Image (cartoon, rainbow, N blue to C red):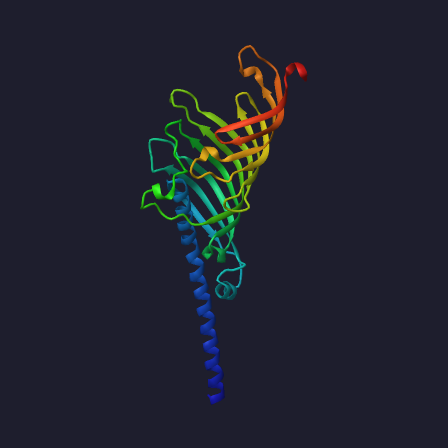
Length: 282
């Protein structure tokens, strides 16, 4: 073999080895994302809600993209889909109460490079089958304690900004103090939350079923910013429409009630102004 051929062969082998090395490095980088995302999700939820977090399954679906681009850009501009199932949060690990939150399925898309940014930004999170179970008064967790009052071993919460949350088929269950009584359950058919960032109010749009009297509530307005020292002081305002409320659940009353109006105040004290049409007015 001539020296020229050997020279071209050597260059070809070096290029081939370089390409293989890039593909291997890209594959290793891709495999790092799934455990990192799981770790960050558990860290955020456990610190935010002081809860023991369980995730039955979490998958990161990498996009079909050039490994050269993935490696050289460290994922910037490349979105991966994150899907999870069977999420539960037990406040302070308590097993004597139902989980505070359970989620059947969730999904989001993230720019891989933003996983290493501060703050971490997620454009949209979709939740399906969310169930929130609120313990009776006196047993409810306090999410507003100051950082200085928390256990020194409490993990540092990652700084995450979620621009939009889309919730479908959710339930809000308020557990009674008397365990012989039935819980109060609100079926939330649709809920959207939009946030402009930390420390500002979020806008929302919701449709839910009122348990008693049964009827449909459609509401939109603003929520927040979150009052960390006293959650009950968190501002809440908006407009509502209460439709087709069946009054027959009350003894001695019959007919359908419809009401519209506005409300404002805080989570602990809301003032509503509106008008209602009873059976005799419709």
